Image (cartoon, rainbow, N blue to C red; front, side):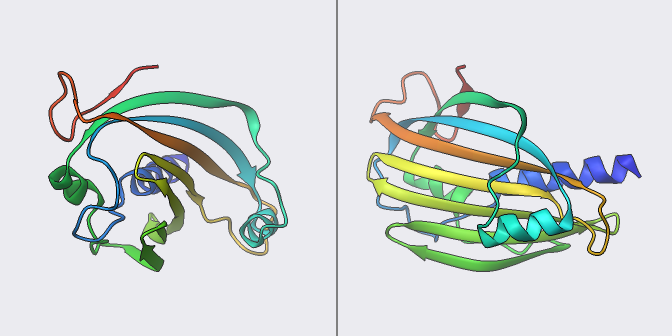
Amino acid sequence: MLAPMKKLICVAAVLALCMPVFAQTAPPLKMGLWETTSSTESAMLTYAKYQRLKAGTLKFPSIGNPEIAVFQSCVTAETWQKFYGAPKEIKECTVSNYKLDSSGMSLDTECTVGGRAGISSIRMNILSPEKIHDFRLSGLLPRPNTDAPSVFKQTTADWVYLGPDCKRMSPGESHRVR
């Protein structure tokens, strides 16, 4: 039982981080070197707590300290399309609540692996051509009518444009710097 749960958590996390999120053209952002600082927290949620979190009546009940990571990425119009193009159909996954405009994007996914549903939600706000704020929630959908908790991860990230020169990085390349 634990192996399918780990697999589903991994699938949900990968989808939350890698799901293509923007239309076929580049967003109103500057292209070049970007730095992203992210904070990821984990929690165990029952179905009732998940519903309250989804409704906005519960603060994310983090366990432990958040994991902080800093990445630098070389973004071009072509690589943006490759990594963040319009949502594509993925076997065993459903995309819903997709919204895109010049101020950002929102997207929800639900995937089924090993009989369990994994969910992810992405809310990306373009604050300016040089700043983005990103919120992602992913995890196993808790089973209704039980008190059995499921693992969830919440990530918030702030993206900052560093300049047009990607230095020694190739387009689409990303490196963890801290």
